[in-house]
Image 1 (cartoon, rainbow, N blue to C red):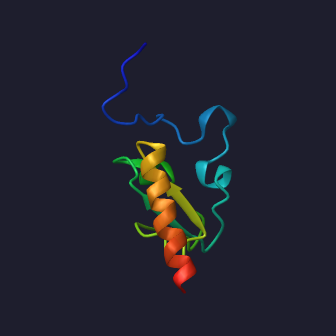
Image 2: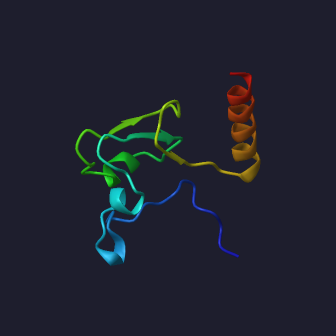
Length: 90
């Protein structure tokens, strides 16, 4: 069994083998707010160029697209539970 890398590795190209830009693959539209949660260093550069008027932020509030990076399902589950509790309190 191979040991896990110390940090996530990113491919050199955002288009991959298909040639389709990553923002298009992720359905990031013009004017979208994209939340990057716990993204690896340098990940935002993989999304360039973004569609016109699309922007990145570090909080999920108001985002049309949320890209979240978690080290375990347990940590993701805790985040989802907090978000659901907050949404139900409104």
